[in-house]
Image: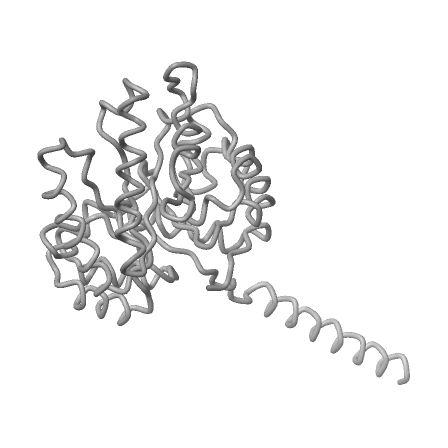
Length: 292
């Protein structure tokens, strides 16, 4: 009788342990403070902005970075209304990709007026950052022209600063693979822009594709990279070519405050690829995001 009682108690404990283990295995993954560059869903958001934003919010993204500003509106929406739409779906408007290439001297005032309107619109949207996503082809041909771009970015950054925004530049691969008069373009830009006016949104994938290691730039230019574009060749973690663990180990020295997913090439539909990307980051123990 005692043996049967003991076996019964033992089986109960085993069963309870199995249930606890099962519950633990289904424990929800903590949602980290990660944003999405909306260019990732470029084919969908133009068709139905509210539906696209709702899907992004449901994935667990905490903020967005639009790439659809024009004529004072964001994806053809009033900035305040776009802000409300994002808030309704649990997200903020953190930053925005906007672009005006280096103007000719005769067009300087007109271009600066464009920036004034753009800045005011994004203040209404609640954004913290404006990011220039590229430069014209002329910047890659002459160090003199690249210096003019740096001066131009300093001027735009000064305008943003007055209105409480920060201005940054987003790279592609050629800034790392192109040398002008023996100088790597990206290094020249870092050296010739004012850190108090211009930050750098480092696109991790394009840095690697350009033949450089993001960690080397973090160590050489600490604190200059408040924004990261978290990118892979396809979905985040899919290619195996990105050493995200070592990159995150240097996050603090980089100055990173926000990480923004961007997916450009897909193995699935756009929304599935964006969901797989944030799921990878939420599940990865080495991915620690600052609390802002």
